[in-house]
Every structure is written in structure tokens, then in C-alpha cells.
Image (cartoon, rainbow, N blue to C red):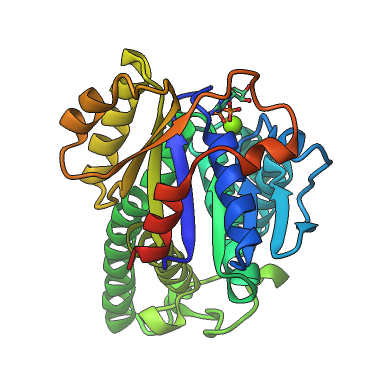
Length: 322
Ligand SMILES: Nc1ncnc2c1ncn2[C@@H]1O[C@H](COP(=O)(O)OP(=O)(O)O)[C@@H](O)[C@H]1O
Ligand SMILES: [Mg+2]
């Protein structure tokens, strides 16, 4: 079994409902589950008829739940960025760090990084203590962006690292010409604590250069997240028997495919007893198994309703996925 499961899809198709149903039913048959909502418009707690917060709490035997507080993660990410910028560029008075951070707050990508670091944290903290982490995802646009972040940012990190190496080489050249050049004196040794705002002044070697070390660190974290998404995760896209949700599901598959992240299955939720639309989904998804959950005529009103939604197929597929 994979360690992580994501349910993706258009708003309203039943991502939260299917995530909660799978979590409930698998935990009842003995699998230790942590269910986490990544959707800023949280309603996982509503489904369980309880309050969920940024800290995990038990919902049932073998079942814990939490809703990540995205604004807290954004604040944390900005705070870490502020510290790092101050530490690494303290000598560079031209940069007004606080105004830069204010811009960063509204920059594209900030929310996505916050989600990524939240996923990284949850995986590192809790993966060992449970069998499966189920992520209930936000609307498609944000989900696709955070899933794409590791591979896109890795390209940036690689480019920036190469530029940094060039700078370091230039410094070596300067030193060869003038051994007393100020730019190569007083550099912070490797391992100096960046949070203590030690200015980096002219390291010459990659192993001594705080910025190069930092870039390598970010590169490693992103590679690990990319591995989590492409190797350790089971991804299911939820659709309804309608054209729009299917079109969005196909777009998700295509965009993720380009990033080396593959969809494992499709959950056709709110299906009619005759399974109308199933053929169409199967035709479009070809190699992907399609699992059906019927529409409950009275809607999902209580936690006990999660026991009756049929998610047998997807549960077995999650268990079997290697
Ligand atoms: N199989 C189902 N039968 C009846 N109602 C359902 C079913 N699946 C989801 N719903 C209802 O559809 C609405 C949207 O579901 P939700 O899980 O919140 O979607 P999403 O998380 O994709 O936005 C909710 O009111 C939910 O109770
Ligand atoms: Mg939802």
C-alpha cells in the first residue's frame, strides 16, 4: 500500500465525502488512518460533525483528523523567508526586507509553498505512526499548482545553483588577482547558523557558501516531495456523471501526467443505480480503473451515512497499489 492518498476533482463532486468515507471504512477494518483537509474552505469537520484544527485529533479508533490552517502556514513560510533574507543579505542595505516580504505575501506561489511545507511537515511528523494519510484537496487550480511546485521549482533551484557557482568562480578569479580583496574576506564558515543573521561575505567554495548550501537544501526537500507525489501517493480523481466534471478530470490527468504524476483511478460518485455515464468515463480514461459510488437520495446527513457509501473498489485498489 502507498503511504498517501489524494482525492482530486472539480468542486462539489464529492472529494471530501469520498475521502471521509474511505478513511472511515478503512480505519474500521484496522488500517490506521490520518485524514487531512488541505482545502482552505474546510468542511471535513462538518462531515465528521466535529471541530478539526491544525493539530490532529482522534475521530475514532484508528482514525485521526486535522484541517491545515493555510494562513498559519503562509505566515510561517513568510517568517522563515524573512529570517533567511535578513541573515543572508544583512550586508546589502539596498534590500528593504520588510517591504519585500509584504510583496511576497501576495505573490503567486506563496499559498502553494505553504501547502507543500504543510504536507512535508505532516508526512515527517505522522507518516510513521499511521498506515495511510488521506488528503482531502482544495479546488483543482490550487491542487494542480502545489502538485506541480516541486518539479517547477527544482528547475529554478538548478538554474540558481549554476549561477551561484559562476559567482563563486568569479570570486576565486578576483582572489587570484588580489589576495586581499574584501569580497573574499570574512566569509561565514559552513554550518554557521543563518537564523543568527550572520552575513555571508564572499565565500569562494560551494561547501562554504551559505546561499549555495541553502539552494541545495531546498533542492533536496523538493526532490523528496516530488518522490512523495510520484511514487508514494495514490491519486484518485472524483467525477460525477456530467460532462463538466469529466472534462476537469481529464485536464487534471493531462497536467499531472506532464509532471510525472499519474492518476491511479477514477471514482464516479453520485452515480445512478444504472451507472449512467460510466461507459463514457471508462472510454475517456482507458487504462484507469473506474469505481462507482451511488448517489444517496437523502444526501449525506450523518457520520453513519459514510458507512453505507460504496467505496469498496477504491479501498481495495489503494490497498493493492505498490
Ligand atoms: N454519494 C453521494 N450521495 C449523496 N450526496 C453526496 C454524495 N457525495 C457527495 N454528496 C454531497 O455533495 C455535496 C458536495 O460534496 P463534497 O464532498 O463536499 O464535495 P467536494 O469536496 O468535492 O467539494 C455535499 O453536500 C455532499 O454531502
Ligand atoms: Mg471538499
